[in-house]
Image 1: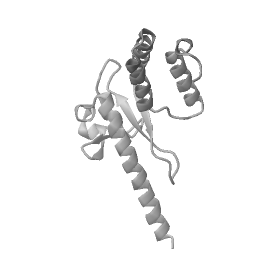
Image 2 (image 1 turned 90 degrees about the vertical axis):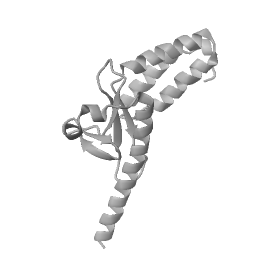
Image 3 (image 1 turned 60 degrees about the vertical axis):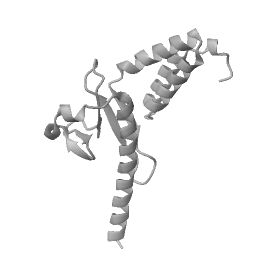
Image 4 (image 1 turned 180 degrees about the vertical axis):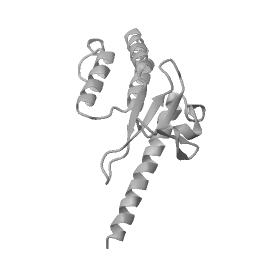
Length: 155
C-alpha cells in the first residue's frame, strides 16, 4: 500500500477482505492473516500493536478456517479446521461435512462419532492449520491418483 501506515485501518481492511472473499466464494488463508498480524506486532509502533491486538481479537471469534486444496483436476476442495467451542483453544482438522463429519486423527480420516471429540480436538490453531495444509496436499494427490486410475480404466 502506498498510503502511510497511520491512514490504514488494518482490522477494517481484514474484515473487508473477508467479506469480499465470502461474497465471491473465495478463501482467505488464515495463515496469511496470522502472518499479517505478526508483522504488525514486529513493527513496534503503538498503532501497529493496537491493530494487531484488534485483528487477533477478531480471529478469536472465528469458529472455522477453510484450507483449500491446491489447484488441480477434480475441481475445488477444502479441509476445514474447526474450533471445539467458541471459548475453546482446541481445534480439529475435518472434512467440513455437516453430517457424518470426519476428522483427521493420526494419519487418516475417521468419523467423529467413531473416534470421539476428545481424540479429534487436540490441536492449537497453529498446529491445526499446519496439519490442514499437509492434509490438503495429501487429498489433492489422492484425487489426482483416483482420476488417473479412472482414466486408465476407460482405455
